[in-house]
Amino acid sequence: MPTLFITGGNRGIGFGVVRILAKNGWKIHATCRWPAQADSLNELARIYPDRVVIHQLELQDFPRIQRLGEALRSESIDVLLNNAGVMNTAQQRYDPALTIQDFGHT
Image (cartoon, rainbow, N blue to C red; front, side):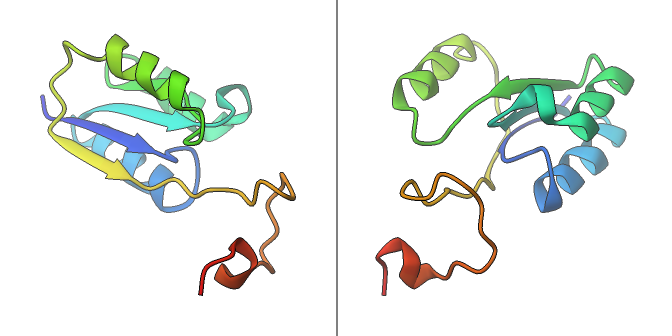
């Protein structure tokens, strides 16, 4: 069974990828910031308990990233899809009106 590791797997494009690949027999390690609030992703994990595994992950939490890497050390990952976004740490909330300039990039 091919295996995908995806960040930001709980909504949008990430969730679409998880849904399609789970249906097609892939094993998926899907990450998101707040698994308890990822209702659609949790439903997929319920439907495909042998295929969809959810992990809590914040991409700016380097110790947690290292722990997850250690936990999955023996897992064979065929595809890595880094789909997660990064929130503006100054605001600590999602604001769709923000542009790349708001994050200090040009």
